[in-house]
Image: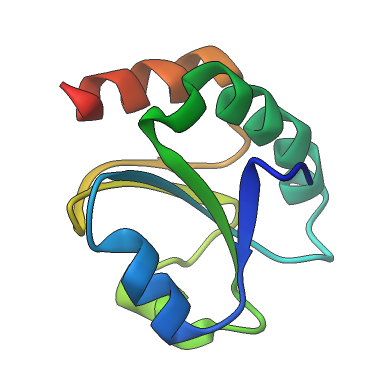
Length: 108
């Protein structure tokens, strides 16, 4: 994971991060193969979007309450939030162009 993608450690940290702006949240688990494959793609997306959006990861095993609030039942699940509200959602491994397009749509 690069310095451009933040790992969320607590529920309060998550609440603070998602309050404003565009945030891509990757709900993952360390034991999940597709989740591990998603990480370098997220690094690529983070580099491409620069400071226009935040990209964070939430470990569903460590923060099940946060995953529950977003009804995450499969991982990886990627949720795009704008000012705290969900505007897009993807389930399963996603490629960089699809995520970048969704982030650009949310920024507008």
